[in-house]
Image (cartoon, rainbow, N blue to C red; front, side, top):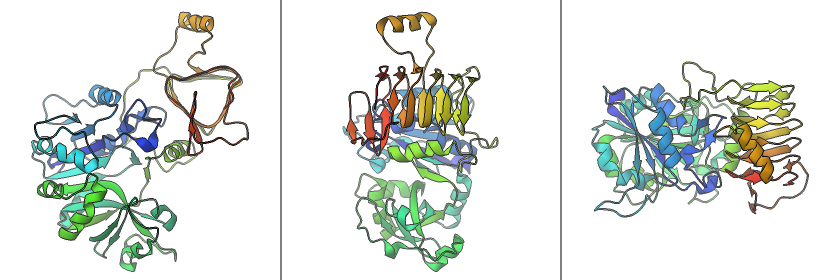
Amino acid sequence: MSQKVLAVVLGAGKGTHLYPLTKERSKPAIPFGGKYLLVDIPLSNCIHSGIRKMYVLTQFNSSSLNSHISRNYIFDSFSSRFVGVLAAEQTPWSSDWYLGTADAVRKNIDHLQDHDPSYYIILSGDQLYQINFRDMIRHHISSNADLTMAVKPVNLQQARSLDIIKASGSLKITRFRNRSHASTDISSFAASKAVQKQIRHTSDEPVFLASMGLYIFSTDFLKHALTCKGEEFQDIIPCMIRKNRVQGYIYEGYWEDLSTVRAFYEANIKFTTIAPAFNFYDESRPIFTQKYHLPPTKINYSLVEQSLIAEGSIITAAEIKHSVIGLRTLIEPEVMLDGVYFMGEHSYESISEKQKNAEQGLPNYGIGRGTMIRGAIIDENVRIGEYCRIGVDDFHREEGEYASHYVKEGLIIIPKNSVIPSGTVI
């Protein structure tokens, strides 16, 4: 089965909702969990599901993503397995960039068909999940579907901000509501009793089926589906539902849409709980990523509570709570972090480089003595000086872009390569 499936990971958009994390990189290249990139999620799920032919569609700020894929997802030379990158390109038939998810696939359909797959699985590059796609493919085949959409049961509050579907008792999808086009009244999309029995729903509260943005197409149907008018898959699904057999596949495990800064932050901080829903520690299903060959993290005289600390970090006499600390992070004495995702550094600084920093009045990589940070995302290669106060003081912070940082969805974000001088208060 796996040899007949071609996976397509969508990573082409500007990532406006995740800006400024996407200021210098594409969405799938955003670091998460201290040492991974978001693209590692769909690729790892495919590998564990026996899918060994994968393309990642890229467009904006794709250099770091391309480099990560080419360095780390290498199969042997004597098979047809691969992870390839298809970047937006000008052709005799089109000079446009990708206009949306469906348009990205539409513009690459000839490349995809060269591999003669029986099925395509279309995946998002900004979601967090652990799914065995074999089960979904079996469901697609057994239901004789043209398109199968993964759907997740959600409550009314969650459903309002998601794409949702209406399905029959056999899970044939009959209606689709695009979150960006619909009214607030979604009561008619509540799951029927027949569907509720399949998801073992016993509460009196209504339950809805949300589209997870994971699709399986039969190969002959995909090219036909892309003739429907629309640039996003959400735009063309109603056309497909009217004319073809579109099936739902219910998934009740862990899934998070990380398409906003707030969702991304909260998903990372949830990793620090005692028993997070997303399991990094399942040896049978590891998340694959780059091998860094870094020394173990060193912690000197510090208090660390419910936090993740990646390799190569050095922490001295600090207090860290509910935080995720990325690779090679240096944290000086008297630092306090609470609810912080610090993405780490790309390299260490030598003694001579630190001496030069001191001469120029420049903080070293990492976090300087006495700094306190609460409720923030600190991007890569950031220098934070001594005795700064970031997110600690109780005053109103207007949303927007500032000289040293952003405030978005109630979070402080320090962009990549920033320098925060000693004594700064944000």
